[in-house]
Picture (tube, rainbow over the protein chains, first blue to last red):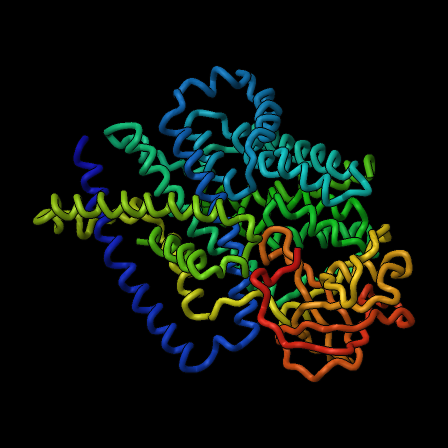
Length: 328
Length: 230
């Protein structure tokens, strides 16, 4: 049993020292090359760099919080706690998990690793996924910022709560009916490391950060490229159309990758769109955006992400339209 | 040492104060906390690697072709070096004229009541505040006042340039631009920061929510410590 951790460590030691060296060489070459060619003065590149880095810098503290929580859940929470707290009926566990989402004061970057930690701790996937979707959308900070961003219409915050919880629960129940555990790749390796809980915690933090972080960068890259190549003003022409307006803002939420704590202010600035379209922007954003889908692919595997993200997107849009037409 | 790359990114932006180009200044404590956690993680990984090298002498061949690429760091984690590379290659800068010219322009102002501006001309007004005041109550709080606005130059293909300021609610990815059309302003390059003193032109109205400023004087300024308006 002692062999495996040792082998792991040796492998890690090798990859730690060789790959970064290569990267460092590439970096130095690029730095020197760009400085000489004066490329950094090019404003399009500069705008791309600013948007890319702002997504990464904004997400990093929340990702760190998420991996700390996730590793703490795996390492320190008793194994049977989830079974004791959650109802035995899986269908009932879904709304409980959705309501529990109100307790995590963070944004979507934190919730992906936390959902992973919950699953590894034995929480049924349906409940963990509902939590993953609900937590960034319905926590008190996000609802408060929505309340502030729409000073003239406080029903918007209520509509956001109802539509987000609704969509998250429907996705959870859909998972119970159609979902297969084989789609989810759950790394269980760290749980087998012999040694203290503290060691498990440390390995979990590093492992999760490297996994989710790398994919976060992919999502941020794509989003920044789209931001520069295709400015947000393309949606303006669709503002008059009711259904197209909803779809346009939902799609914009997917590519913009805005933090759920800020998206209400951006949604409020789309004054030419219908309230339902604004609602769709706020319901979709925390559940499906490029950086989130990338992180889900990194943590749970590609098989999972290609099924989960489109399903969630459709549920979120439908929930927004229904709640928007009733409440707004 | 991909953790160290992320740590390096945060340290560079924190030490040089460049983080305000990307996120709101109020995120500073969270960034510092994240840097501390990353530093500790880097130390632990480095220590483990050190121990592994010490113990692993002579056993290295057994592991060399171990097909074991599915454990250890995932490939994608190599990308964590990218933000640091970008920061080192492209000079960090706040969003400027390039993004402003391609953004939708100021959001349509919503009508609301404003308190009168403080006494004493010229009075310092933020660009977003100026836009909002011009669009409310027929701009009555601006009538007869001399104002001083600070922003950067965004060229206008159709005529006089715009004095521009971005507002950020969380990070630069969600920035909204606010602009004021200048009249009789000096000829200036894109992205030049300038303080303009002048009067609101009531007669022109606010087409697309963009008010006009009759420029009396101008002073070139340094970019403010927070390039984005509150």
